Picture 1 (spheres, rainbow, N blue to C red):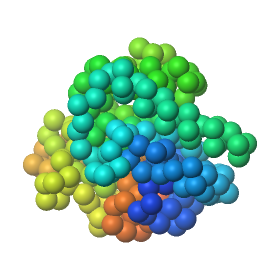
Picture 2 (cartoon, rainbow, N blue to C red):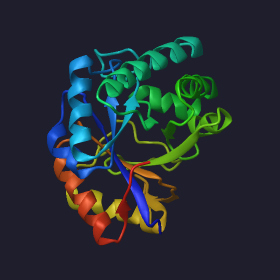
Picture 3 (spheres, helix red, strand yellow):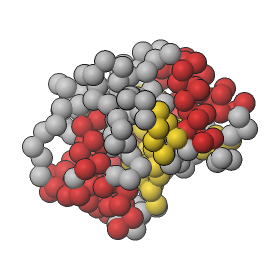
Length: 247
């Protein structure tokens, strides 16, 4: 069992209770203009993170605010590298103005899912990240093309598990349009997170058991009752003797 673990949440998206969530986590992935967020929300979210000692990272996405970055778009690797770079730089500039720096990069929504299976998109994200700062940690799904691309680009990588999302038998996330894809019962979510960390496994939607590596655990900021989920997860991890520590 891991003795320490990062606990992250996607924030600055204008649809969650960031002020209640931030004191409960160790890292925040902040929307930086692609699917949500603008200079004001980035500035306010960074300030909240600094107030509570929470590490910050960029949460770049496809440029698709209308669909919250959760619809696939026909983007090229060149286009992907360009918009990921712009979004990382936008948040990094605001962070620098407040005397801090980015710790990690984690794609959002459809871009995250594309980076699981597409080497070209994964390489574009990794190259954009490495060209900005090779000290950044690249966060992605275990076994994904993104983590392999990050390693090729000379980046440290972190495997992410999801507290509030169902898994398919192949290790992918259940599509959001499928019933039960998003989990919002605090006790259920906390129990499965402890199992992920303690036993290195999670039950898939069909009942099969998947082996799972987790360097960081995520609760989505837009999941219903996300603050209650985050509180339950933090309490359960601490009760299991797992120290929360940023990447």
